[in-house]
Figure 1: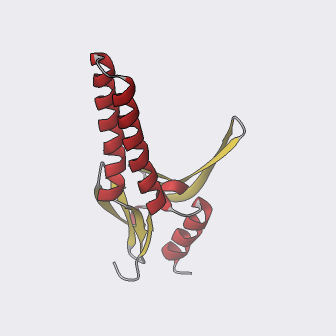
Figure 2: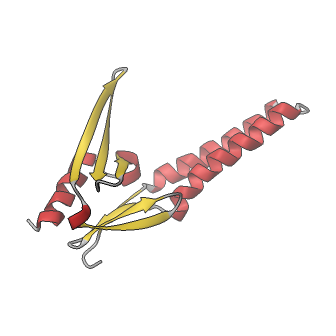
Length: 139
């Protein structure tokens, strides 16, 4: 992939997830002293949060693209190369609920739908969609 453009999880999000994991573990251990159920829940919750934070360390680049196609994160920390000829549509889905607005970048390959939030990309979804369209069309 020559002249590759990459979008990655911002470092501040990784640090925040790690801090929340440590805070959750510490709070659970302090408040649940002597309680087996609390200990089990704390360990389980901490493991889940740790897995979530580790994914950002193992696969920080969620999406990359060049003139040949895109590379998307697949599974926990794998990647899948998709040539432009297999990309059917790139669009931004916007939802409003409970006074909040969320955007999701959608890359549709016909077989799979790859979804990315602005938090995963470290950029505005509409801007990323514009850049991908430009790379795809060569304009």
